[in-house]
Amino acid sequence: MSLSTRAIAGIAGVVVVGAASLGTGIYWAHDAGEPRENVATMVVGTSSTTAAPFCYNDGKPIAREALNACSEAAEAAGKKDELPLLDVRASDQVGIGVPKDLAKKGWFAYTDGGSSQSQGGAPIIGNARGTTFSGTVAGHTVMSSTDKTSVTVAASDPETNDVYAVWFFELKNKTS
Image (tube, rainbow, N blue to C red; front, top):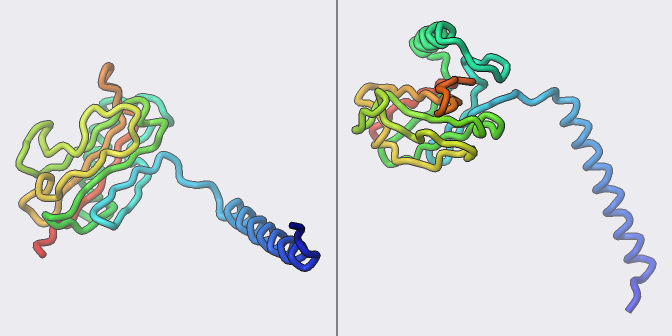
């Protein structure tokens, strides 16, 4: 069975239109600028937000003094409502994603709430290495009793305790 000339011409037209569309898409993506590097993602239910690291030293370990200054700056940003924020309910699932290159070093995420008080808060994931997403945990296990819950994510080598990047997010606690 052979294709008719009309069918071949129709397929060729679709290929030309598809190639033109693809070329325009590639141009737009290139023209849109470079993507942000080392972005972490927080997922709550079906919503998500991203953030560049609040503290980062171009892939090298961050000095302890710089980490202390970074934490203070993040606390001030939180008071001014300048951190990435998502609403959370007790029934929501919460997860965190980190870039692949930093996940290889190791990472953890925790909140300042929850019923468990390990590491000063409730863990979302601890001592992960290689995996780029934490999976999800129930919102009620990580929420604080105040209006907002702080989320800290850090790329950190568990063997050397070197910290390479820190992200801060906030969850706005909703009752219904």
